[in-house]
Each structure stands twice: as structure tokens, then as C-alpha cells.
Image (cartoon, rainbow, N blue to C red; front, side, top):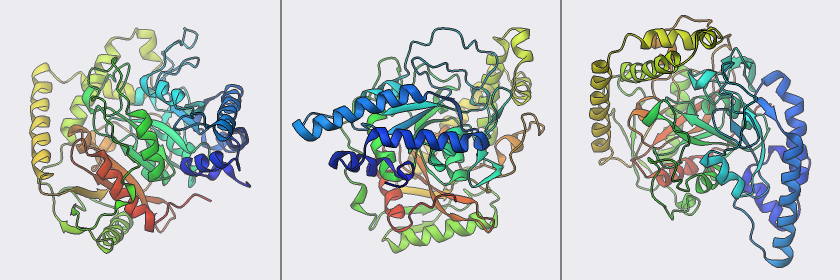
Length: 466
């Protein structure tokens, strides 16, 4: 196998099953790829090659026992996976992109998603970069520097799961775990040409809970929709440490992926009624919607009817940043990202009454979308309004709402409403940069979102960066 690091997870598993490929060979190829490209991309902040190879050898033994004796193997047995540096991983420091966290403390706890991946036989490679505390939609920090886009290293990956997205796009492991509080899985997946899924809130348990509360989701970055479904099957298992986690669900998210979308009701909203969209992005998404029509969907151009909720997202976000900031010592504060500091200063302006009003408006938005989704099976939009912009240092731009989130007006509304949303690549701009199509479903119907995305992917395969 000449390039096993470029194979998606579902193909790796098939090749492991028939014995034509070894998890050890794949791990070695992926580690070699990381060593080759990470100096220019800065996607990984920690790589544990020795432990990954040990894990791959154990997986190879389990596959041998499976082939000879029919022994059970994990759902992701031998598949390389990376973990975002916001997520606890036993044996590795979780620094959250911050110089304020002591790396020398004991790291003995796996977050629920990390534990489930281990149990499923995944080969954990290392930790991927994030901005400090995941505080922005581009990936740079004083601790780790700038993470760069595999399609054009002068461009940003987006964020805050930028390291995860760059790793998957560059062939540094087919699966990665990200988090999404205002678009942080979908934005970098769109900028890097990957599949990125934000499941329904509570579908993937979290521990500790994000300080950003009930807008924060965990989800997979993958090379294909099939891989996202495989990964969600593993990640969705309930965990008592997360009191928001959904009950046990027997759904196999791979089961109905190929069912097609004949006669599904699709609301197509090119702007959500308020967004300004780059012409290349608008055209690629319009082309993608025609593909959905050709596949049998009943498409109606329709806006949901809400005004831009950016002030809700920004207000709730920066008020939490202010809480994090005030819990730090002056010395810690002096070590933080200037963008984090600017958000904390903005957050200091919000009173409890302000935050309560924002929460009430969020509830109105959620109710509106629950009602809107009774008329449609899914709503499709661009994922991000613009292509990937120039990568920049922390603090390079003055903080305001538009600079912070104004260019990603399609992502944060669906964190507020907690709906499942996926981005799939739908072509390239005239500059050769990826564009994402976002598919949003009714609350808890993650399987439908995956099914629609798979229908599109089946006729429009994902391109890889050269």
C-alpha cells in the first residue's frame, strides 16, 4: 500500500479485516507524515509516536485473533486518531493552548470521548492545536504559534479546532476529535476541505463541561461522511459525568447512510436572510444545492426568519471569558493571548440582567427553529461566508463582534439552537481554496444529517490538498 496515511478510516478497517494492511504499517506511515508536514503546518502540539506504535501493535494482535479465531475487535480498531488540546487525555498534558496551565501536574483522567476511543481500539497519536481556551475561530496562540492550512500555508485553518482540521486534511490521521462552541468544528473543516460534524447537544458527553456551557459540542473531523458516522457511533456512548448527556441510543449511524434523499424536504437558505457571502462561496453552494435536487430532494429557497443573533453569541461568549479571566492571578493574566484579554474586557461590560435577556432571546430562537424544522427535513446553507483568510498572529486585529464572528454567520446560530450540523466540501474557489456546504437537521436527528451529507458525497467525492 503506497500511501496508507491517505486512506479514510472505513477503508483501513476493511483492509485490516482481510489482512492486506497492518495497523502498525499505517501508524508508521501516519507518524512519518506528521514528521514531514507538521513543521510547516503546526497542527500537532504533542505527538507520542512510541505509545501510538505500542497501541498499533496491540491492535494488530487483536486483528490477527479476529481473523484466526473470530475474536471481537473494537469499532475503530487500529485507526489513528488525534485529540484536540482542550480534551483530557490520560498520560498527556491538556494545556488548552495556554501558558497559564502547569504541564507538570498529574494527567490521569480521560474525558468521555477519549475513553470511548481507547475502548474502541483507536490508536491515539497526540494532541492537536487550539487557540487559548478555544477562544476564537482561528488557530493561533502565544503557546503554540500559528496553525496553517494544508491547501495554502499562508492561510488560516480557522478554529478553534484548526489543528484537528489541518491534521486530517494533510493525511496525519483520518480521524480527529474537535469541539464546537460557535462553529469550531465546522469552520476549520470547511476551510481545510474536510467533513466536520457538530452533533446534537448532549449526543457526545463532555467532562469536564466546557466553561462555555450549552453551546459547546464535541464532534468528529474526518476524511469522509462514512468515517464521521463510524466515529459518532463510538463517541455517543453516555457518561454519567456529563449530566447533559443523552440517554443510551441504539442507533447505528452507518446503517442508513446509503438510503438516499428522494423526496426529502430541503430548505435552502443562501444567506439566512442577513449574511454577506463571498461570490465563489455562494456559487459553489448553489451548485451543490442543484446536486441535491438532482438526487431527488425537494428544495425550496427559504430563510428561517430570524435576524442575525451575533450579539447573543458574542455576549454569552465574552461574559464567560471574563469569568475565566477574573479567576486568574495577575501573573497568569499577563501570559494570556491579547485576543483573550480583549474578550475579557468586553465581557466585563455585561451585567447579570444582560445575560438573562440574552438567554431569553436564545430560547426564542431555539423555539423558532424547532417549529421551522417541522416543515423541512433539513436546512442547507454555506458553512462559512468566506474562504480561508490570511493566517495571522494573536492580537493582530482589534476585537469587535464582526471581526470575531461576523465572517462565519452560518455557524453560531446552530450552536445557540443546539441542532446537529455537518459541513461537507463542495468545491474550490477560483484561488483553489475549499468551500463547505452546511446541512442542519432537526434536534436529535443526527442520522438524517449524515444521510444527506453522504448522498452528496457519493456523487461529489472529497478532494485532497496537493
